[in-house]
Length: 191
Image: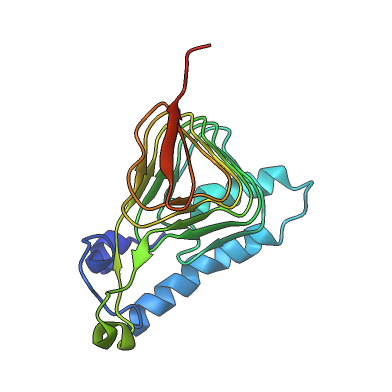
């Protein structure tokens, strides 16, 4: 698998770079080939899906599952899944840098995890420049349907993000958070 840390360190350093670099585009296409194969699997091809996940993702924990289709800029190359992660269909992982999902976390359908951003400067945006910041989702979280996580955010362990929320800032552990922008609604009470 391609070592993007060595070949393209600008992806992971938070610095502004040109994503139109020809070598970078070719590397992305290579990574996306496995994702294409994954999305083309049939429902009865569980072992093949597992094999492809292990090849295309940075980490595929024990018993993790991703329902196709999945979309990812780097084919999941920078996606780290802990054990027992479940991701429903329609995930969009803008995985231009690392996205970490802790064990026993559930991701609802049509969630977007966007690690890439563009400068506010119109002149820099016109040049197509971007920068990336990693996303961290803790263990045992529930990310509801249609949630969007923006670059650089973290969601603490055991937290629940309500459907349709837009997470623009870090969310602490053990809370329910909802809205756009996402805000803590209340702590999760022990049962």
